[in-house]
Length: 349
Image 1: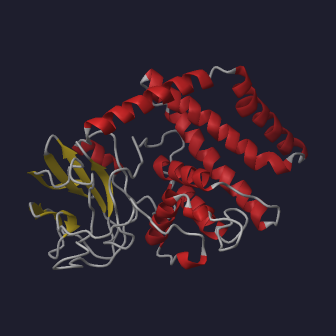
Image 2: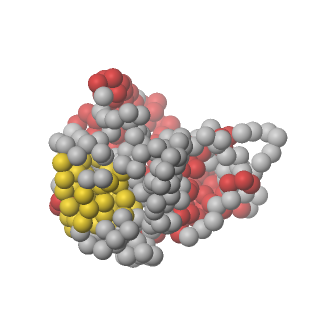
Image 3: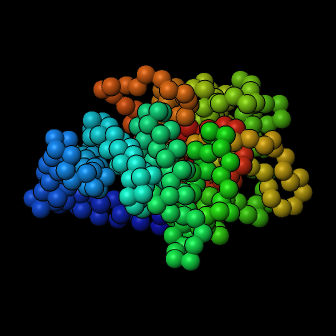
């Protein structure tokens, strides 16, 4: 990470720390985002009244609990998983309520940035069934008032939030769904999530021998099986990259190929050059999910997070969720149709 970016992140972190520390002690905020939403939801459960507010009130409870969690992380150096668990549950419920209203012709809706945030929370929580539910509702909501993204002469809102579309592409790829973006208001430029005019082969691949490969440095490890979900982790720590597949180390090597401190600040996963010689030297497939972490993972960390986030329903944890340290797509570009693998960790030193 270059010095200017590091300074910007430090300044932003300080601003957020002050914001959340002030926000959670405000009596007005507590009334609007905690006391009143609970009261209204209780009234709905008891009498059926105020049904039209259940989606927005659930969203306010999500905001309250996320603020408690953010303040604990930023100002108290702790990670209260109970708050994060509540965030994920409220996020799912808010989408469900609004989707139900939309399907019933009651103009249920959710903003694109909120949809992406709610979906991300459910992915990060590790609750696969909930993440699948939210993803399914958002895909169907493209054609209803929930998202209202079909081409029309009123808006271009789908073109304003590329991260939403990126998440939807990941979900559809993981589920084997076809997403025809030509039907919707869609960004003309998907950077930093697309790749144009890439001229170097250097990057992270599954090579023709079906092993993980940081080209042109090294490869090895267990065999990658086509048409099977694999959890792939790449850790970059102090000039050494560690490649894992399904929680087991495949190889390590000293290299700066996957260091974000390069021209363009790019890290490239499962894609070949798009211009020059030798174009398209990789198999077709899908990337289900990419998570970017704020610290170098240990071997134990990688083993603990290995798994398919979109697997069929399994018993969900009742009192504990895995807290992923970060989810962002800053500083790298990824093509939409790539090999079927899910780099669970890609961390610049």
